[in-house]
View 1 (cartoon, rainbow, N blue to C red):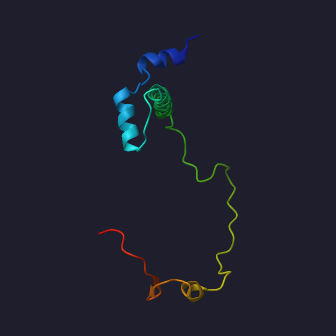
View 2: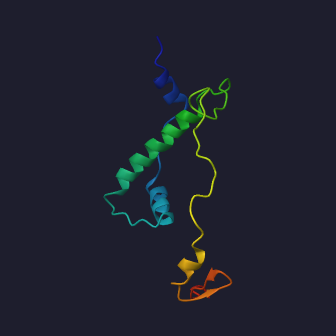
Length: 110
């Protein structure tokens, strides 16, 4: 018997992120990483990317898209009916400033 995992590892070597790539990702995510944390993230993110690569190589040619995981079942939905009163004016009575039914707030972007 053949070891397909070993076979695929030669065809598709695992992707390893570099330290610079991890630092760039951390910068984009606004994360401040300690130098000791970078290898941990490097290993974790590389493994996630490898898993996504394995999923991408899966043969899905004969698979039909599903709208629901259990065939023949539908989701029970409640009726689309109004169940509460309109309290718009009551809530706006407590607002500091209102105009044309809208809440007025201070400008924060110049």
